[in-house]
Image (cartoon, rainbow, N blue to C red; front, top):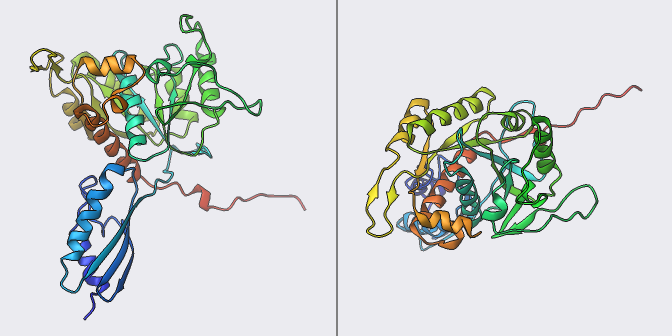
Length: 362
């Protein structure tokens, strides 16, 4: 007797993806199930980048299906398929960018740029095509954090090529101005510069574009929310009450303009002594989680206040590339997977499926 497809599906319904918490049948991740006598072949398609998780998921499937009495061999192909997801009403998607994720904070100095760059690097490490846009026009920090200098080139006289390092495509006003020169610009010029950086950078087939936002809820944030197709926002805060106060304002701003909050990252949650390893919550504790409970959003993770994160970002090799197998890099990768899963669970963008209707006088 050969195994049935129904029996295989029943076995797969017991295999839960540890990242999404859903089984492979209800999530429709298991596809193309084929049975030939005792041989079973199937595909598992993940909607998020998960290079580090593929072997674990493949092993779990082989174990569950292989335990069926009639099965002699199990061939599993685990792949990742990242698609475009819905954005604010009335805003068109960019042709060469599938998903735009804003990393924001209501307050400066909470480690937003460091979180943004490590989040981008973590998504890239998990197999996605990723870019980072430095939207902090007054205080661009991504050139230093990414270890990039020089000016972008133009191949057609209209668009500029992103500069690259550590597998990321990067665009920043910092590539075009002297690092010591202040940006003495009024709001309209700043918002125009942001739009040019976004639209005139020749991004190449990005799964995710991470936007490192300036602190606050001003012109740049409004431009982004009204004219840029944002899939979702990540809020960065510290446990300190004064930072949480401003983080709430950032969260409410995104809610008002219809941009979903993907979750909250608590930075500097505990200080770890470099001499003895003692951990102390010098900015308070539990603030990020409390805010998540208050607003019904996901707590994505907490990062310690350690010298290594600061030193690595300052030197142009952020933690995820400096210590890819380290404990802190694993936290960033876990946060990145949670963000990508939240994006994958959103409604897919269907505008490309609709025909274009044109009305002509004949």
